[in-house]
Length: 331
Image 1 (cartoon, rainbow, N blue to C red):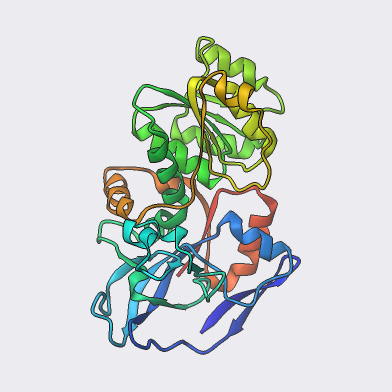
Image 2: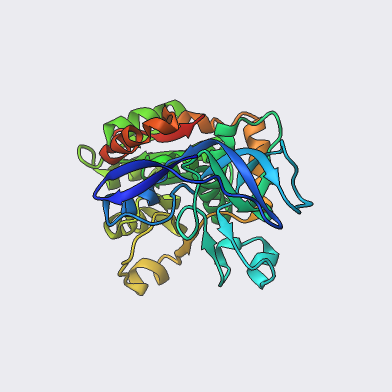
């Protein structure tokens, strides 16, 4: 079968490798859609990786051995978290918090290939009304911001601000708008702000040309936003988001960063603010996301390009420019 490999410094190769055979409760899935994620960037542009990448996957079960959970022909989205299945976090559905976590596409071979071998516990059934493309978007591009939105406690009619109009920010925006939440979107890219306009934010702000704090104060009548989402993963963004909050507001950090220095009195105590971190989604949320898509949540609006597997190098070259929304590898 064909499989993508990151060789480092942006180099992408497609190699012929053996089709894996299912043993025990592992199953073989014929890939139909795999979406490129921002977390692919580090290994793509850095030193490469040994395992086949691709952790946002959906397809059709092609072969099984002893699995009783799935059958040949089943349509599935793939939860990329391979876990112990028995710890407190696994039992609660927070698989990403398992102490024995292995991630498909990083720790084991992923879905940028013709076939993917996974434990049957990673297979999440997809109804016929949901396309493979939509299914591949649920497991990260929608799942991560959807959990962030749920954890924030946002209510219809509230005003929120979202920093970042990449796929995660767009997922948050469409979720908020469908829930009746009023949203402002902030990004430096006019390309991505233009893409976001189709999702009906009330306000779009480019920090390169617009005064963010002034625009948000004007929009909220001087109160500040109830919730601010950092989907960029940047200390400057998080601090700007904190300063934009109303009293008792909440900052939700979704984008990955490694530093945030705060003044507890100024940033938290004085206005009784809260800060939440969030990562991926609880498995109990999957059926709810399916229902939202069936009700019209426009997840495909974030997709700007589709490439067949043989053109993966072209897909990742475009991805590296940033002049795109979500890119899908489809068959």
